[in-house]
Length: 72
Figure (cartoon, rainbow, N blue to C red):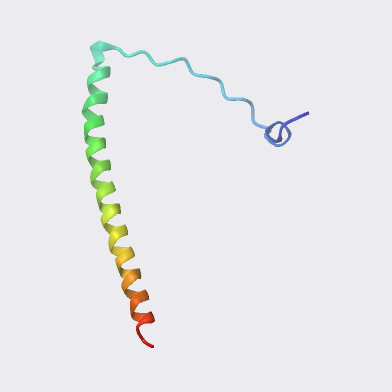
């Protein structure tokens, strides 16, 4: 029995790429560490901003709900 992909996917299967070799002369390992730290810092700052924005948004919704329920 053919799978969905076999029936509808007319593209050839992707060719697997061999694993990349790290050349110590080009600084393969140091580049990952250098950019990895910066990427992590940017991600942490972005996550804090998302958390803060979400908190403010929920507080706004909560305030709006309380205003509508107190108008009895």
